[in-house]
Length: 73
Ligand SMILES: [Zn+2]
Ligand SMILES: [Zn+2]
Image (cartoon, rainbow, N blue to C red; front, side):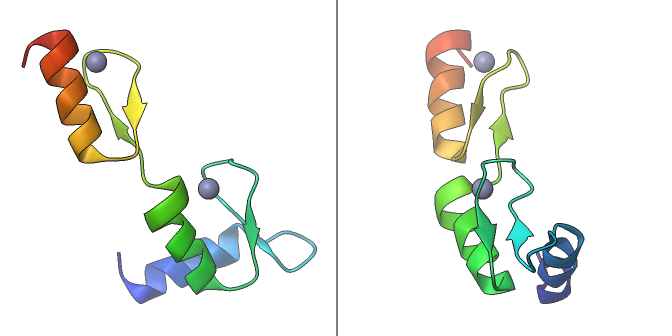
């Protein structure tokens, strides 16, 4: 994701206190766009959804392991 996309996401999620709230609704908020970016990458993560059931994972490797174990693919 580009630098400008992060700044845009940061601004649209800004609350009254001047902090940006995590769009994943995990309850975290941040003073700087880089803090939110770091949190997304390392703590909250962009979720990977299983196409065959409701399971979500924050790492693609976890989803792959789930697919192999549960769905046999
Ligand atoms: Zn989060
Ligand atoms: Zn599944």
